[in-house]
Length: 232
Image 1 (tube, rainbow, N blue to C red):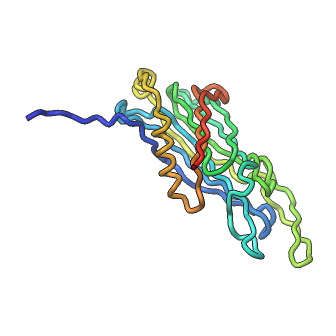
Image 2: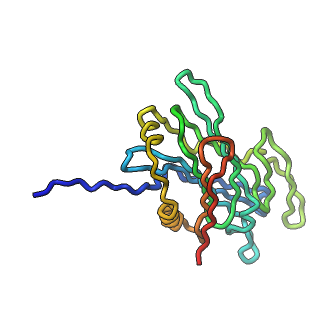
Image 3: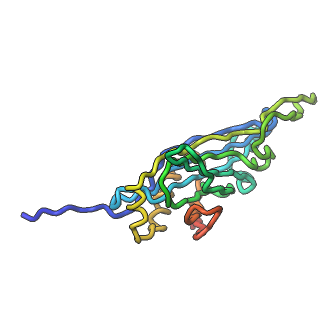
């Protein structure tokens, strides 16, 4: 009887965070929604995380008959989210190692980052642009918006920062980093696409295959690979 072990060598997309933020720019008239997702590309062969990733799916509120109720991917390309990645060392000193502006579009948009140092990683996202509702960049304080209902003008104070939140927090130690840096096998982009398609296909709204962006290394906005996947 032969003893053998089958080793799974395929990288896996692991989702660690999913959530959404919704804002009414003018109450009852116009609103925006951002769905966020984040996680890792994990190698069972290495028993290590090779990359981490962030996804955005953007919506505007649109008319359903005479009322503004549904959130669809109208003006999705006008939405934008800022991603900031910080690494904390053993002395609790932190450094911003990555900043990236992720635009909306059809379906989810994803950006993948390679891992190349030890430390505690914190991934922070905040709104920059909010499509047709023109919410603007996340800043401090509030502002006044005016809207009309049944022929009467109303004013409302809204926050200037729709959202700013941590969506991923994790540690990379020397052992895991050595595994990552010692591996010369590239990520199978087609397989990653297939996994993302299956994951985003479980979404409630209509989904189109994602645009996949790979930001190589951790330099500011270093794009190594840009592939646009469209359903036939």
